[in-house]
Every structure is written in C-alpha cells, then in structure tokens.
Image (cartoon, rainbow, N blue to C red; front, side, top):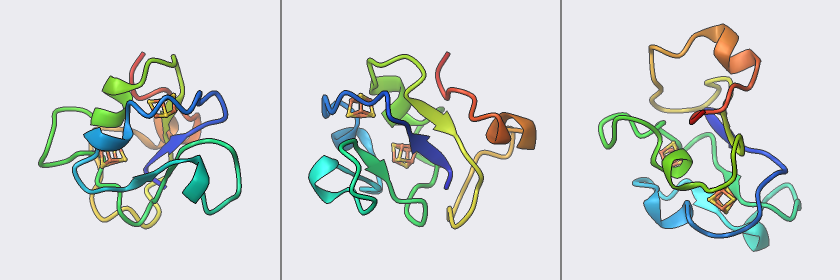
Length: 94
Ligand code: SF4
Ligand code: SF4
C-alpha cells in the first residue's frame, strides 16, 4: 500500500474525485468486501507530481481516516515519509 483508508471512513465520497490516478473505489467496489472506500496500492502515487500532499487526505473530513502505509506496489511514493511513519500508520493529514 501507500496510503490506506481505515475503518473510520464514513463513505462520504469526498476523496474519490480528487484522486488524479483513479486509485480509489467506493464501498460497492471494495475488493476486500468491507463497507468502506478503498485505495488500490498498485495505482496510488501518493499524489507525487500532482499535489503537494495526498489530495484524498486533504479532502477527507474524517480525522485520521487516511494514513501512510508501506510502499508496497505503489508506483511512486513520497520519499520524505519515514519507515516509522508508515509502520505506525500515521495520519496523512493531522
Ligand atoms: S494519495 Fe493521491 S494518488 Fe493516492 S489515492 Fe490519494 S489521491 Fe489518489
Ligand atoms: S473522504 Fe474520507 S470518509 Fe469520505 S469516503 Fe473518502 S476516505 Fe471515506
């Protein structure tokens, strides 16, 4: 993964149209069957080359809902985010 949406998601839809690479799907298309939005790790580029910070997290009204995760299959990622921040699932936007 790269950024991840956790189970505090309220399915408001604010993030989905902000993603420049269409990495986000809604609860109906969540491949894990959870009733929350989902980020495809093999598509998310952490908004590198598009925005100064992940646009989904900026748009999200739910505090701490979108966090940093391991880079995994992410094609691009923010190099200034430490492994510790990722492993602790620190919120992208405080
Ligand atoms: S960080 Fe950017 S590229 Fe990744 S899911 Fe959020 S909006 Fe899309
Ligand atoms: S903006 Fe946040 S709360 Fe709304 S659907 Fe996206 S992740 Fe869930």
